Amino acid sequence: MTLTKEQPSELICKHSERENGLQNLSEILLERMMVSGRREHLRENSASGNKCNSFCSQIS
Image (tube, rainbow, N blue to C red; front, side):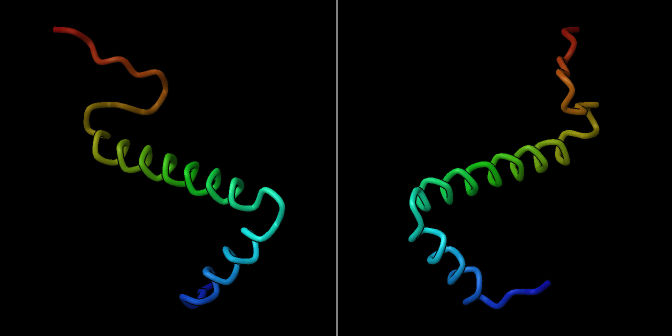
């Protein structure tokens, strides 16, 4: 599904008008940013063996 630039903006505006809408949107945005950041971190550090499972680098 491909959205035009106006469609997400319209959805955000409609959602923000609901009760607690701005708070919900903030939570959604923050969560998505954290997931994206973690995904990028794992992609950049996959060669070190970090699998996001309580990995702890060993001290030499």
